[in-house]
Image (cartoon, rainbow, N blue to C red; front, side, top):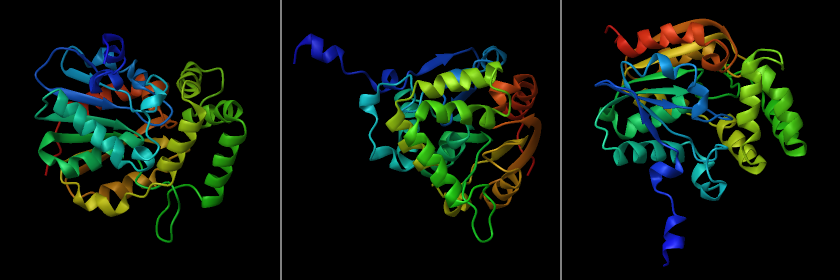
Length: 278
């Protein structure tokens, strides 16, 4: 194999665009959700780097990653993402961290913590949901027909779908910087990958694993979120196996760290620094 071919194979950390920044003893890992990449934390990061070492990474399939490394089979369940997270932490030789997971990354953190509970001192989830579909005794916010329509719209005209979905998800008008930013990161994703990830995320059901999560979980949730009804935070609170605390943010939208950083920053700092009283 020539040197040219060798150079084309990125390391695990390169493939996920892993960045380690900040000064501090304690490690905080920031995991992003569907439709974004690590840039979703850009307003939050400056307020953490003086006190913590921060690890940022991109989920495989994000627009900032090489689509050739996206395995449709591996990422047909959320376990693929959990395995990636554990691999990244192992590669960095991390023994303990605080994991902050936005949206689907909150559930990915839960899965990873079941495999390796001692690796996570706590999980802080923002806008997380174990299931998006309504069920007999569960309100997730969507009916199957809603999701079928969403998938159909994504497939028929991806750009038009993103343009319509972004303001709804962010909870702001199309001109707002947060909507523009969410739209930008979404447009960067290859449409077939975005469709595959959307199906994996929206059809996921992790209710059965919640009781196996033993690490403390801090549940942060917008008071109004198109993707995750407020009652879901209560469901997580009662279903997770370890100590939990819920805080409802006076924010609108699924990406409060992007649209309302001034609200999220002090709350997140408080939850990173403080532990749940058992």
